[in-house]
Image 1: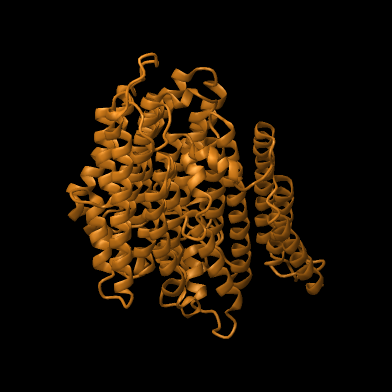
Image 2: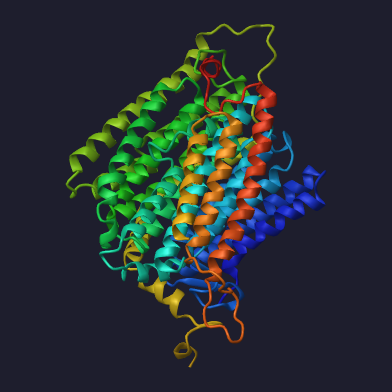
Length: 513
Length: 115
């Protein structure tokens, strides 16, 4: 049993209090420790991903208690890939926050950032539902702090909405957990998978209720229409680096749906039959459409990016809702792409804000550093709208291909293709207003010179672009890997046997022999 | 007893949901508190209701109640308590900043946001 799998949780959990207690007044030391810690996270995450790339499952029992009784951490291909994605994203977002000076505009940015990472990584690695709840709360409470970082009325008001919406979500989550525990007597995912299959078909009211409640909770996190109302204001009002980091938070919801609804309530289970095709798929299609229409209708650049996040989550959920191995493989490919693309766009919108002072989509004199920023916006928009040559196009193609054999193929193709067109229009309109029409506006001679973003800020965005390009160039390998991942998700025997049959304290006697 | 506890959970939840829909910070926070009380009782009962049965092993005792929901409830209480404190602080900050305690966006905010 290797101890490394708990490192992604322990490392930020130790670093954050250290930053608060020891380096409180020294932003330089905070930055050094935060970057060093995140770099170490990237290394650990990469080695974990490497260890499970042959299909083995990493498993950790806290306190050595055996599985259904003790708390377990499980790392398979899916969770380690998400951990790696999170830590890479966090590294570049952190560099951007340092380069743009966002971390000095309020207190405790770095400590909250580490706690946020702890929550997200824990949610990916945990093997039981109650700890999923606990890690959700950890990441949420850190995100409340990050969301209102640097203060301001608009941000605080958006923060109240965000916190209240998520509190309601947490309460629903607890109701779902209570119902599941009352029905099955366990909250360990592998154990649940076994027990749900044994429930008497006559007495499935409680477990059905729990399955739907859980889906609602995860859909709130993943911002699926009609549960998306918290997202536009809070992502748009949050500081840009925080918005970029939040790009992974919607994916936590998607991850939880994939994990729970392939392992516990998989499509073969009678109690939840129809939940995905009848409810999740139409909701996902509507969120795709609404997100992209929001892109076209937005009057500020940050709102536009927030709506594009809803749209791309809709795309992810369409692929997930197919609940076929090809669909899940496409969804996983698209999740990586959409996280990176959304983060790039949030950071680029902040570059624009640095250069021209505000983000409203009205012609204004050229922004500082406009040429490079415009280039980055162009590339980011191509990625998000799903035009060739970047990975958005490949991801969309994979989703369309996965939907080809389904009964709802016409609907999916129509919505995906037309919403792509709408989002292209939306991004083209925004880009031409912000960057091209700027040249037609007379520059006020008395105005202060426009500030330019710092080189480090550009480097951080460039780093995310490098990841996007790598994701495109190695699309074959990545998709091959996500296909294996999807196969593993639909045949979770390795996961279940590792969790349930590794002996520890309190194991059944036959396993101790 | 089951009926009493179940109706208590139901009433708390109904009151909580009603208060949530008031869309002012203070009632909404009260509503969330009621909802968390309801969910705590609900979690507590998920291990079945039993009177006079200890959750820890002792000699000469045959009937036990399930200790796990009690641990879950403790975690849930701590978390919801902390969250309520956070939302009270953020809500107060937002109210003092804009002298308005509506939770949803107001029309003039929209106009301001779009200007």
